[in-house]
Length: 405
Image (cartoon, rainbow, N blue to C red; front, side):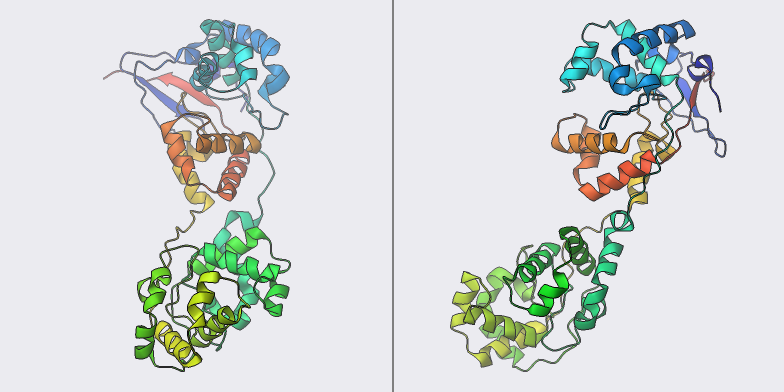
């Protein structure tokens, strides 16, 4: 829908507040109430103000943000169609030095607040950028499903879902991802000696290892479906010294230390022999295993294999759709903000959104809410969110008055 500057920036702020309506061909408008003290001068700009804003923007902003606010520079945001009050407040923040960008500070240093209002109003009046057609890979979209797919070759030995049915082959469930990744890296590098594992992992990337480990960590824990050849009661007594590292009842409290509960007994015996013989390198385990004879090893293994494994303390990643639902609470449906103080994300450059979310994580941008939202995001989740919003259609917003009661 074509929009004139007069239609886009149409607002009269009354003492009772204002309603903001988003234009959406297939959806109902959603009202958002604003407090009277909000600085909404850019929303009230006239067509003459917008014309003056264009002159200022062409002189001071277009070299970085592009003609008509469509950026061609990596990490530099589109400004066309952005929400006016947000732009004004951000420009003021740069001018005050609250945002750490020497280039932006220099660009706005000598502009009056009236000029900042007009520039913000001008960019808000423009048609926004078109959506990006860049799409993330399936592996990026869902690390758990990607891990399941990558682990398909493991099932032949380790069993469906990582529950072993083969003596001498370890269970993979019930372990922290950090331990499983470390074990895979050790096999791949040859630090752990197993030619089949080294060959299987040769072409597996670090990201894929992380996805595989996450997939197994989130499976329902179950004991290995194999037979133990030892005395579990005697093994419980002999395993007293093991609990300090491997946890009570074989459930480790350290991400880097494996849980032993429910593990295949023959595998545990083989591991103890390897530590004792030096083919596995760990000074603590070598020292402890040195004094253990094979019958005691079988007893210890029988004890741990009899225990019920527990799920590790691992957060199941939110899907991109679940993260989007959280972001849309402030930024509007599909990133089309209906509040002039909150930025629209739809059709924004993905590399800019990526940069901003990392800046909130590092504390380079200050906002309590955004810092909390960004804190737990992984790099893959940030990439997914940035790509998602870059693909959304940006929509115009008209601001109208709400009659008082």
